[in-house]
Length: 249
Length: 323
Ligand SMILES: Cc1cc2nc3c(=O)[nH]c(=O)nc-3n(C[C@H](O)[C@H](O)[C@H](O)COP(=O)(O)OP(=O)(O)OC[C@H]3O[C@@H](n4cnc5c(N)ncnc54)[C@H](O)[C@@H]3O)c2cc1C
Ligand SMILES: Nc1ncnc2c1ncn2[C@@H]1O[C@H](COP(=O)(O)O)[C@@H](O)[C@H]1O
Image (cartoon, rainbow over all chains, first blue to last red; front, side, top):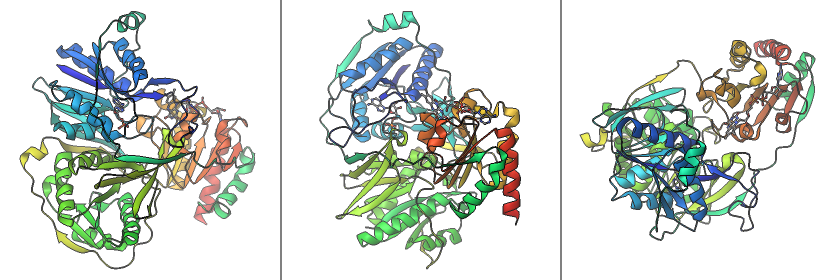
């Protein structure tokens, strides 16, 4: 099986986001970057599929040179090689998908995994964009996946209040949701080997963002409210405030 | 010309988030001198007419049994055909599980782009601009789509649907041209716990954290939720511990919610939890640690033991709501 896993290089979840000097993106100073948490499920799904069916797992990432570090994290988990689409300028979701679709077009992917969402721009779009650009099926937010020998598969996706069962067939793009598997931790040996695994660089076609960021701002700071009181004695007053002041009950 | 709004129903009942999208689109359409056409998959003629109550001039009603369950290829084709027929460059839909899956494929099909999960949208010098939270709500970006075709998904529970009123929508039966190839990917069924509200759709939420000390104490959370007609949520710590299902997790790697009332019981308020709920309209926290970070975002806090405070609060609310 020819398996591709798209990963994104994102600020750690504990990052205190500050708006950068251009007022349109975050200030990268002091930010630690990680492999997008959902992409760990995607990498694991790729590795498990390879272990079951054989083949090769390629980690794909679009971005500047710094993203190689994130590609190596996927390689340390056990993927075979990397594909770095070298885009110095930040791209919107469409442009990122376009760069990946162009790079994968002639590579005969059997399956492309990605995460349900990249925790920087929270787009939730990649599986649909890529599926449509590559003219293959897409299933998003898969929390369960069962691929048969003939390539037909069943996925369970999380929807409001429950799950939806989807059937489809490979080649396809599948976005991973927590619950799909338990991502493995890279072992020391894996980290060492990752340094020697090949990463191919490709240049994407120039692209002008379709979604233009006009400005970035911080949400209004919520002021700490009041401590109504201590223990069960405060309950009466709380209910009064919820009714009379906040008017939510 | 008109703005197209993709609406959703479940068991014949149109989802509230769809009415919110229709109402919001109608405001934008009004400012741009055009109207709203709703696209409704399934449900009955009354539901199709009812879109008028929220501001749609017309409903394209798709009564095709093959589309009762979601199939992204077929839905994309149907909506793209509807947009073509109506000459619509702008398509809006709620950012539900369905909307988030449909919007990107649709945007590529229409040769446009998506602004996802927006929390504000307006007309600015003839252009539509939208605001959306990024970095799990730690920042906001104001965006504009520069391609001619534009797709917006609207975060549920943020925009008001208002009261139904006004004229019925003109209903037009619409039969998209679909072939077997459009159903390669399809839903074969859903399992939805009946009577259980999802946190993303709920007006009120009661969430529990590690302070509850174990799954056996969840009747405290559920009891309070019942009086408030609320959905139950959870912190990641309790989901990771296996006390509650992942579907209930609120936060950066769970669900983002913005209910009218969010009650946090025994939740410390880690940055990743706050990211998912700090846009709630009113936040109440009960925690025995007066320095817990949750109190920094709570509108009202009680410092105390959940095992003492919650039963008293549930009782007091019962009396209040009963009277
Ligand atoms: C990549 C990443 C993603 C994450 N995503 C999320 C996410 O999506 N959602 C999320 O919630 N977390 C997330 N987290 C985890 C987050 O950092 C916290 O660990 C988690 O939110 C803590 O849950 P908690 O508040 O229930 O537990 P704790 O932090 O242990 O807090 C328990 C609280 O209960 C109080 N308490 C204890 N006993 C009582 C009592 N009897 N009465 C009253 N109060 C009591 C304590 O004072 C304490 O404040 C993420 C972490 C990482 C690294
Ligand atoms: N720059 C990128 N390079 C490769 N894959 C990406 C990139 N950005 C996002 N992805 C993939 O798309 C998924 C969903 O991202 P998004 O649609 O941006 O929220 C992520 O979990 C990744 O798998």
